[in-house]
Length: 188
Image (tube, rainbow, N blue to C red; front, top):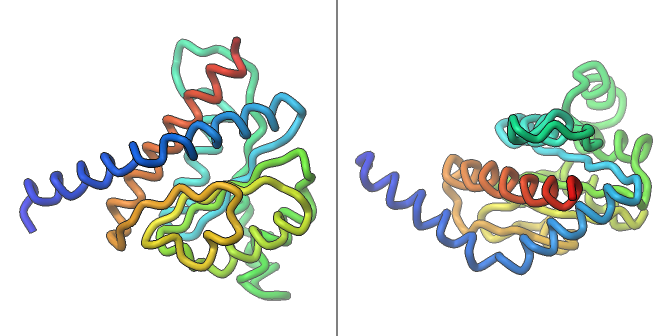
């Protein structure tokens, strides 16, 4: 595939984000409200999506824009601690790595953002099931058709593509846009 075709494909998928405006605005509102009430933002994903979860958590903890010198916003990637991940995988199951951490650290004041390009990551789904049972609000950054996880999302931001790279690019865009708008609401 040529560079020009890849750019067109990427642009088309980015344009599809406009159809999610209501869900995006609801995500912004819910995240800002939870943080104002003392809640935390938990993020999880596998592989490139784990890296995206860490990247987006850093944007909240530090800042998104250099001119915004604000207090840190509590955000935690559930994929940061290799000792916990490997111990949990060894002693329990790889499917438990996020739900176990959420069980230890989460409360109903919090938000869980799961990032999965397939929508079928078993460990992210298990974390969402735990969140649902314990009244932790969930937002899914999803690809494909939303996969099995979409039924566990309070808000599902679904990019209808199986092209992992293009979906991940859109997830980072969505994360940056949502977080910049949350930051504006919190800085007021």
